[in-house]
Length: 572
Image (cartoon, rainbow, N blue to C red; front, side, top):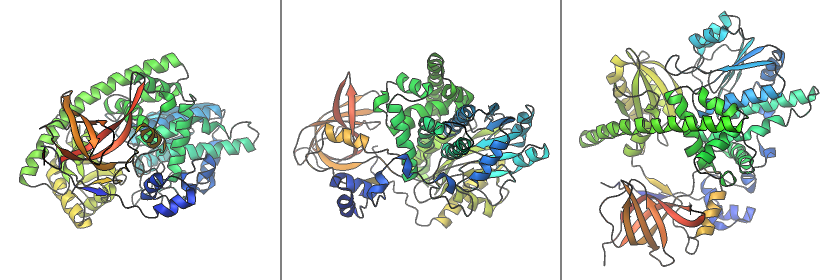
């Protein structure tokens, strides 16, 4: 059965004022105002508009600590996702370029060590006798790991962006825009954004000490910053949009690391037309696949090499791993959605928790996202981490904070979770297998208590109708370039009524259509992924994106349909 989700228009406060202030087309003023833009300065993506480096709390201390260890061994401890991989690669490239003598990295394999700076990974790192451990994209919850490093006499510099818990590790220095009392104006930085700020501050300090060109070096790797920021799905506030747009500009100019070039070209993307969606849906998943199924070091090495041939080899390996990931995910998704259908026939809980002993722990986050999309409420998918323990990955909906929900579960029963952490929209946790039913009950009870007005309707929020006369290739191109689009600054989604001229099923489940606006105008092609079913007749109502379809060098506009629903019967 096709979904029937309500379609609502996004509120547009201050669109006329923004158009008057900025002189931009009212259509785009409407889009930007609906996304919180109040003045033209928020559409200026020059690097000079970044929040000042000096405003990130503790950054001067972090720089001094790095300078103090410049001639000694430094070990970077990363995370096993695209944000962690780009953060690690950025640090290694910059520190090497700054002349640091001995910098290495270590990323815990998720299957052997789990997430973050654990005591076990600290002991492995200690074998190389580092003078300093630097975490990237992790560390704010690593109480025991930092304590173990201190016991071994190794200072730790934590760079992270995850939300802190009630207790902080006793690191030498902590760099995190989400620390209590932080003065930094952009709390949405990804881990790679925090790493970039640190490298920018370090570069300036070195330039002041006579290292020519050091201040400009970090900006050479804004492509890595853009990739990690988009792939980690952090909200694209103005600061993050600057970082992403500047990175995209480097990619389009061909000034990108060979690994990103290879991953884009392998997927048939042209560098000169790269947009944020290419990073989020093409490059990011291939880097992530290495950490999900094997070892994220494969992705890091792809981003570190300057050898184009080796980069293409790494990209090929990552593509094969990603194909395997898709197969595993498809099987798990089918099981999960079958279970959800059974729940829908009985009673759908406020928070959907699912587990199968055969599931792959590296893929449960993707399955949780699919379940969330299907049932329009927070979902947590679990896999067996080790004997007696389950690893869970949560994905939430707007208005329900994932980490706060887990905090509430912990408050209700401090023994039900071994550990947890994360963001507003995604979080990770570990529970005892024997407590799965207890956790499931507590998660829904806590959600209903914390968020009694949570919206489970799955409403599709659109930008309203696309004005007559602009449903064309020029508009599709302009919308593509008007971003960067992403989390918190979503790509435009429109609603409208269309006459069905032709339709056919392509692949196994996709619907290909030829449509004409009901109010009149030129016909346009459309594709509705995974929405094949009974034929439509007459007029339909769509929620859709207007995109550029390119085939054999020919470009034309195409509607990518989020939802299609009948409006009238044929001949009515």
